[in-house]
Image (cartoon, rainbow, N blue to C red; front, side):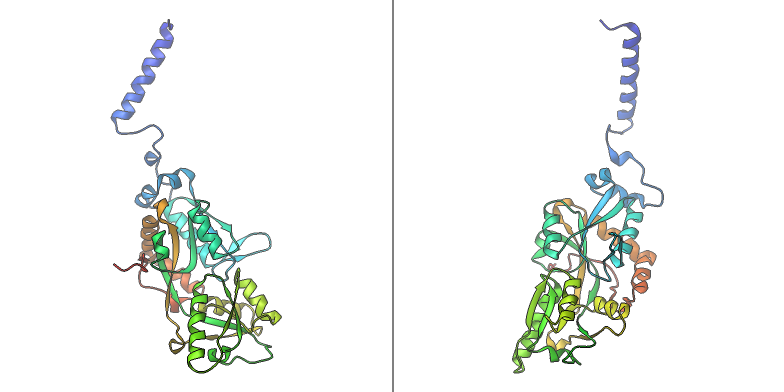
Length: 301
């Protein structure tokens, strides 16, 4: 038999619990916890339970300047870092980047729940949107970076016909290079030989070493490379006649995690506040901005 003091303590505890449940609170319900200072309360509360409990969104990220530049000590800077910081402040969670070696590794890692998101830049496609939600936040065209001291000058993109071009495997640039190669063949010149590599740094090394005549990348990346290494590289940009399109590039989130709709709303808030425009201007990308973030733009309505 319990002692009278013990019984009184149990009765008091039960009364407190009853009062809490009567007011609508649930034990262990993290939704009842207030959003951190500076966060948007509605967006924070809309986050999936697993993200709110963890307090962090894990982004996969390969080395892809100017989106992500990985320093020797592991520090990451770039457009992606700026957007992650802005999203984290708005949502009231931390953001962190786990460096991966390729786009396929990022996509598979998200499907395996190792990462929550990947800020690309990745082209939106209906096929990928069967498994991922996408938030389009920029457009771009494809450019080809050439060493300034190349033995054979590349004054225009059609000079790459019959040449070797290094590109990141499974990237939007790889698809655009196929279009350029088809143009070359239609106009009676040799097809372009594509060399698929893991990341942008590897493609630049291939061009510098003579393994390839050029490194294919987004126009934004080409601008960054030639600006940061003045006199070392030049670049040419693919034209519409050569099959180029202004591709929609997006952040990717697995549909299974249910984070996509919240990140879409968060991006909308960054657009409305002017933060999006500030970040894009900082990196010299005003020419590839979009008026509003688009949700699953690759899938027909």
